[in-house]
Image: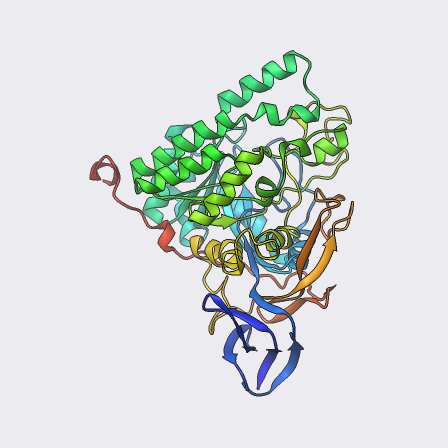
Length: 476
């Protein structure tokens, strides 16, 4: 007898929808088909789509920023929100600050997640200090334990890595089996633009996008792609936001450079005009890189169609609109002192389903690939991202006709606002399972903190190095 049978739905399996039941035993998918036999529980899925649970490989949870501000979400509130949105695996950040041992940082984040997470998770290691034992002891040890993703910034004074440090980290990833993820913006351009804007009195939140011009992304993406090509070590370029950025990724991949890229719903669906109006409205939508223009959105959609951008993530970075978050520096804070980021864990999948499937920008296969199976593949999350025998029973049962009009504060996180207020989406999950356990049942919370487990990253195909462009001497 199976533990659970999902009966009567249309299952996304083998790249297409098929009318079938899904049998679950011991937290994994045991069989797909008809007349599979008895189960202790049957979940009716007639009229619904049975899809893999989403894999969100870019989210900030219970993390202290470089400016010392704690995210609004705990692991419990963030993963609760993720589950309501159909996501069953998150990759968050273990953020090192200067002077901290990486091993201790990771142990602290693992403990927080183990207590609070309702769904499964993994970590990117934000490296801000490469001194001491970081490169020679801590990273090799952690990567051997399945923490195979390193995150670096090319900007922000307390976490910025220069090119030499990036190269060192690329070689650690090459030697130990891993991937380097990059927030790529040119630090000098950002500081110069910010200084000039403030000197002329243009320091209100609505001027934030002007302080992050496209040139900053263009230069840094180009430079990081060259470093990846130079070392032969794969990189993931986070949150590509511009048409030129998409072209850089395409050109690099065309040369054979080991470059992978992602983008986010707010770059595909929001306009820079969102960061206008009064200080509160603008601050709520400040993120970095900022939202861009219509030509950029068009180019990003085309990059998804062409396969140049291969993952869609939320970049969930929640800060409340009060003194604990966005306005920690006061209600009249200038834009450089307003925390960057928006909530996105719960809205990512419904927004993308509505745009890609309901409205026809792409199709269901692309939706599943970009939001679940491909992120799982890239980061070596074995057993995630697919509905197939032997895979974890991470399943989201979708009502493709369900309509949602987002309200001012209707999400299940702890941010206190919804940046998509007023937007209508068609298609949303109603029941969500994590390793066979219902975490959302008929639109109501059923999961419990502590159910989520850490998923060690295996060395994926996307992490495997190629030959350095300058010869074997680099790997001696």
